[in-house]
Image 1 (cartoon, rainbow, N blue to C red):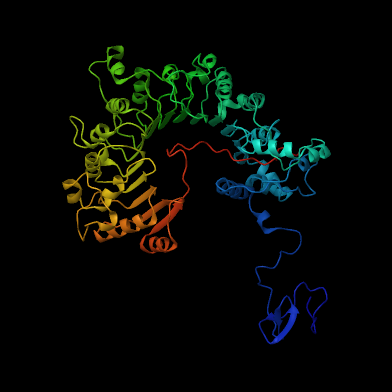
Image 2: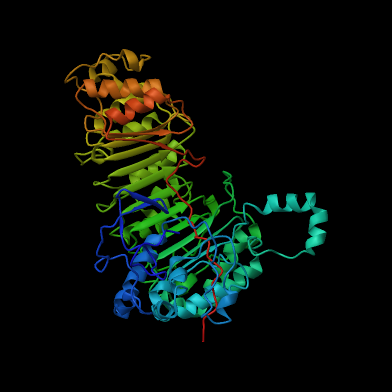
Length: 580
């Protein structure tokens, strides 16, 4: 409240004379003066009457604003569930909302007012991401499919059990008495139960009739039964003319076995979409096999990821090389415990393909290789040649890889560039080779700008050599090097002269500080350093990094060091019913 002054009305919403004068009063601590201020041009005054200026925008522009907001919000973590509906919403919509996580942006704007809701519901592109996260019977997802009308659909189904399921069961056992009082009722903030095979069937029934407008289809599960059910249903579906991305992931722990299990689900190799998906460019298969030879959509790919396939369900060498030959625009290839069946000796004699012809892939920019033995990996790299490769990830936690490292460091016959020489980024999660091979590798990495090294699974000489002059490394390749005692001086030739960024796990603050100082002293300074948050870094060292570098950050380590990120399906809000 404020003390009313002469000339004011008791109905005035704010005092007419507000400033920082000398007449102090008790209106929210604001000083009152006798100097009048003209509020007619104040942009913060509410509009007169019941009209809202934003509603004067054309519906097309408001719709575009909703689209931009939805795209931005899709990258944020939602922490609250649905908000309660306004009184002017329909009775059906009043049942949409629960408590817990916030609604998606498009749901939020559709609940602001009647006009906004009409615009949102008449913007089909807002409702094209279908994730089934609300739980059975999936009214929300079904409604979104209906609202999307003829737009292309992005479909994601996460069949994995909820991480909290086990904890909830323990809590239920400990709180039997409270549970009896609740009579088993499920509160609105509780998450849906684990995804069952029946749930997957119900979800597939909702989206299968709209397969002609699928743009992406992603499904993840802990067991193969879910994937088999999905493949079986898709084998009975018509072609997918708009499909661009296809992802099947099994998240079960990988065992290095040669025979697929469960054996009763191994065959048949499913031919999905009748083998036709003409726009498919990205495919990712973790532990999931399809009909390799009959799937015509395994061509024209830009991204191919094959991981965790047992020997008996991998494509033959002929099938694998045909996929590469038919994908003339391939940019990313990730092979992790997968690839052509058999051994290199088998490949070279298969279908009388002697002499063996290397497949050149000039478009390939990114390559991931993991969980092979050296003989297999070496033969694989003889299969294809990427002359313009920019990024390479290696994860080989067993065996001696000296010969393989030398192979990639040396130009193949008839070529002038080695595979390493074109790289701008290298990530090594695990690798063992002798010190001389490290020298050879670093010598060939003349264009490298960033490197990611995990010293939890590799020797520190990979790090130490980057702090020593080239001459010292070549003269004493097996010497034990202490970074702090590096002999590097101004203009001293160093390995990786173009290196700007380094990411490490297993390196402490003192060694990294010395490394940064050495590289700067040699005239090849770093710009960016990322360190594992579990590594020891003192506050003074962190302050040094932030002062000396353009960018310094900590990152959270992962058990899976590969750049193979599982699909994340955003938890949906429980908003499903359309108003009439």
